[in-house]
Image 1 (cartoon, one colour):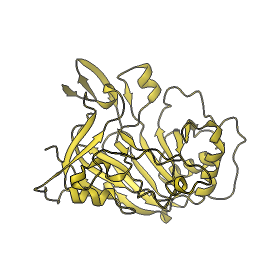
Image 2: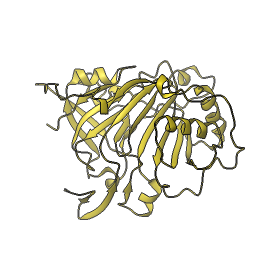
Image 3: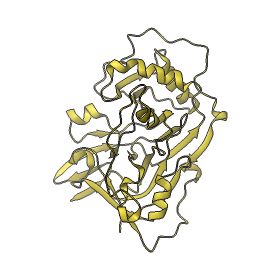
Image 4: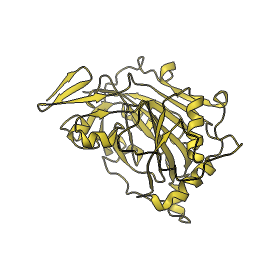
Length: 323
């Protein structure tokens, strides 16, 4: 049983605090990064630090000069967005991996103080290099009408992966990555019934894994430092210096979606008479999930959901119903 309170909730007799940025919103921009290849190449150089094609999380203090091309690129992007948050937590992933529905958290704090679930101010996905056979490789955002439980979702927004694209969303927003994209739907509705593909780690020179490559920098902004970081892991490197701009000016960005501008407004969409089941796994333990359930199950238009999940460019939002 879940009982909701202001900024906290009770799960099976336990209270825990949920600190999140206000409201749900997202924006999607194309043509943001100018030199994605150089940024991607830098991440590859850190290959010896990777675990399963993932560069460990690093923390940037924006009051210090950028130490490398990634720090410089992310700082440039945030300046164009007028984001003044002091700290950037970033990591890199070089594979299309199925990720269950979750919120980003101060992971160290959550482990040290179970129930203290602190979210970043903003979350971001910067798509550097997307393989031709990535099938859209989307990030899916899930709008919950109230925080923090994942059981009152009212919309899903599907953002296809495109090289050079930037997704920015509220730091407490629920999100996931399906592989294949249609894995949330039953086979009778055109999906795979929860069957997911095995991971394909990119191997240089291997055509299959390269075609399904999904190289992304994921980064969160924090007004104060998340726990567990002594300092940026890049501080040991030579300071970065270059006259070449890494980020396009904001006036050059193409807006692919903006929830605040009403571009994905679903209020005029009629509820379908026949709905398909949409089942999504929840990441983490019961406290992180916010529910004893291991899956979220909602209902929506099967054809609209398939169209959105299989989109390779356009951002699409589909209403979700709880019955």
